[in-house]
Image (cartoon, rainbow, N blue to C red; front, side, top):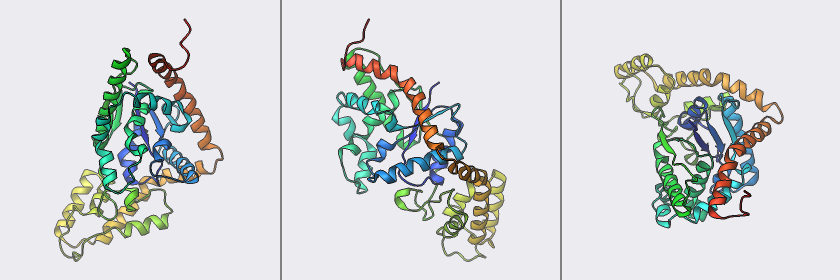
Amino acid sequence: MRSLSGIQPTGEVHLGNYFGAIRQHVRIEGIYFVADYHSMTSVRSAELRRALVDDLVLDYLACGFDTASSILYRQSDLPETAELAWMLSTVTPMGLLQRATSYKEKVAAGIPADHGLFAYPVLQAADILQFNPDIVPVGQDQKQHVEMTRDIATKFNQTYGREVFQLPEPRIHEDVAVVPGVDGRKMSKSYGNTLRMFWPEKRLRKAVMAIVTDSTPVEEPKDTTQTVFQLWSLFASEAEREEMFARAAAGGLGYGDVKKDLFARLMDHFGPMRARREELAARPGTVADVLRDGAARARALAAPIWAAAREAAGVGSASQP
């Protein structure tokens, strides 16, 4: 069963990215790509984009991504994806794109409504369909894009009378934690409320200790729905959570104590990954080698599907008998 997913290089990888995507990508064999084409809707610096791609690849490798069993490639290393996106865009109804929830939310948040942002689902469909995957692991917020991909694939197949693309199924991650940021909102690069597991120890400690809490006195019971408890719970067992929450309900537990324990657990959990990342970053050419190999393997899988789409649509020279 072929699985596919991607992640944008738009900022430093943080706990939300780790628990929301990277952890699952490391566990599930499949095809994964660094979506640098997609990042162009928000990152406008070429130098920054290249640096973010390199950092993201190092983060994946540090977190245990196995390049032998799975593929990791850079989206733009397969420029044929952009050609396929154009071919798909010619059969994509405008109404389908206008119903995209993600587009509406981003525009409402003040992001400029350019064509790239509007046509994002078509490029995403090309990312997916070029490999004819069986499943696409996504969070609930991306389920609509997979459904749109199915609609676009159906429209292309019907238009040209050939079953070029199979219809992928979304697989909703059931174990994905909604990770709050240090200010209580969803952890997001755009909010500037993140905790990056690969920050220097001093910076990470300072960020943890700055997590927003209420002014409840130490001796009073604590509300365990507060951000600091939610973050702490990501690294605790069921028994540990029950014990901590009982202490919070009884009073006498300070938020500072919870933050200190959270920091210790962060360092313990990510310690081996932090060491591995430093080692990998010290090896020149590591990222380039991984992306070169990933692109070659991804190209071999996608090439027959690109050819079938071109043949079906009558693009380029006809295939020789």
